[in-house]
Image (cartoon, rainbow, N blue to C red; front, side, top):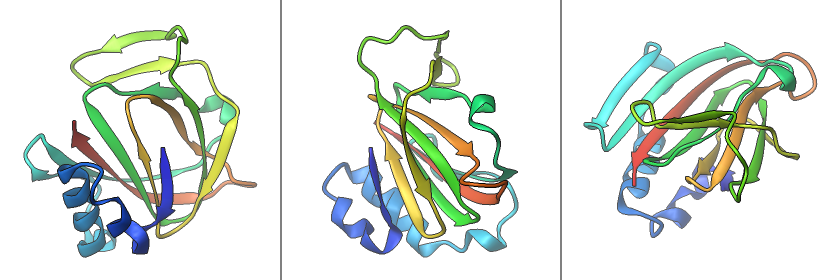
Length: 149
């Protein structure tokens, strides 16, 4: 997992060519003027999901991991706590859904706040949970980039 400001995104270009292109797209796109929904950047290799929601109690948030895609979460407005833990030998609470590329797990303990202009990169070994209240409810506008490995 990586957490940083979008202004530092060039530091991560060497990770993977599609990650570099997804971060560039995040930096150059005005998501505040876009409608909610899914936007193809490079077909199914890179796509963006623009979403809005109110944060929730941690108990109401799911913990998930992916196999085919790297997630890049970018906060436009509001703030949220995200939970993370490494996928080691945990047993999933919901078996892997091949079509939608996710499985669900029990929670972890590590939490980090994401605020506007911050992004988080989650790899397949990163179990993550988003949308938690930072201290009180927050209305969040966020982009999730899905990057095919």
